[in-house]
Length: 161
Image (tube, rainbow, N blue to C red):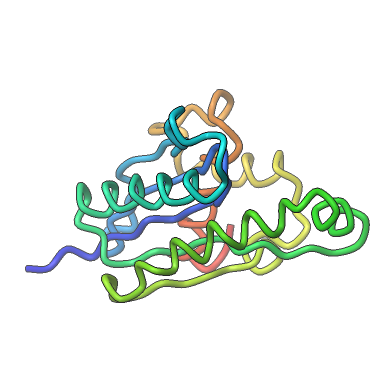
């Protein structure tokens, strides 16, 4: 019997949040941060490739056949700052290199922040996840990128956060 597993990703070039799920059971299996190895931290392209290799390891380790990944979206003042700092460019490159895995998967979905959380602040997202994952995850101590990866996976499985 084929396992139906998902990786949910909050992309970043420095600290990417990742969560792995059993889709049928709607169960969180693992979570963590993916950081580029120190040896490649000076070159953006090498960092992205290293991140891809680490995600492929997660995919293999958990027999993943689906990925949902947040894709950058920007509006108003925050969008201007993101554009000027080139962070949107870097995030889009990370998302693009992850998308290269599409052929190895049954499904690859991009979701914009406004689609899965609207304008909900991080604290509200954390509070909404608390009831579902309190026994597994210390949400008070967890990295916000990992928390978002969990929220994105929760959204995929339940249609809301």
